[in-house]
Length: 213
Ligand code: AP5
Ligand code: MG
Ligand code: ZN
Image 1 (tube, helix red, strand yellow):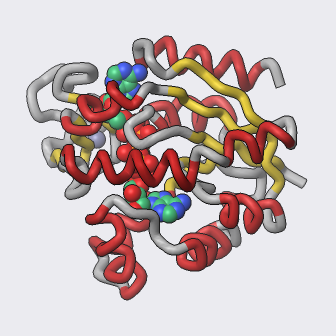
Image 2 (cartoon, rainbow, N blue to C red; image 1 turned 180 degrees about the vertical axis):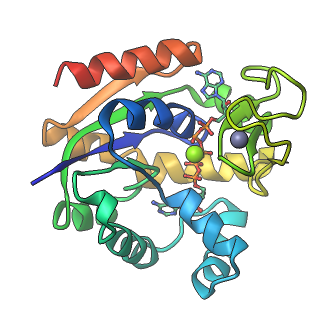
């Protein structure tokens, strides 16, 4: 069976930022549950509207909603050779559900201390066209307001990227998601990478970890 990679870490760790490089190297498509939920919300689907209250509050969306979303996504043809999960699984229940529908090859955890997270999240903006991730100070666009990847000037900021919600998201991470490090560790699948260094260094560390598998 084709194997999948899990990109793991707290909010703002750099999962979305690093996903592109991993997709380019492995050919596995990125599946970001956060991006899928935001797309559903923008499209005004019942699922998106149901998820909104949780996302705005910085709380996790219920497991059955997320697992349903993933099951459906994995039926698409591009998932046949395995995928790169970004922001999933986030609870033990999600990891258990995943273990019965896909084989996880490795969980790459991007480790960043809490005190770094707020500044990362509060300075983030993304391209509305291609999804490229930027930061006011740490990863600015070369030309003000213009995406380096696709040239669009449609930049967006997320509704949940404010200091108060970030603190709730961090709390959800520590109580509900962080226990997965032991869960995957016991299965010999957990590899931690230092995320508290420059974007390119984190990317190199991830590629080295993947190479050594
Ligand atoms: P989601 O969209 O997954 O958000 P998150 O996990 O909080 O993670 P982020 O996307 O905020 O961070 P990231 O690690 O991708 O960082 P990024 O690369 O952008 O989830 C949103 C919500 O949806 C959840 O709160 C929940 O409600 C719901 N949800 C989603 N999945 C769910 C699930 N499975 N179960 C239940 N609910 C779910 O980088 C952040 C910033 O830092 C950027 O500005 C970037 O430029 C900058 N940066 C990146 N790397 C570095 C670096 N090395 N140095 C300096 N700056 C850096
Ligand atoms: Mg992200
Ligand atoms: Zn773009």
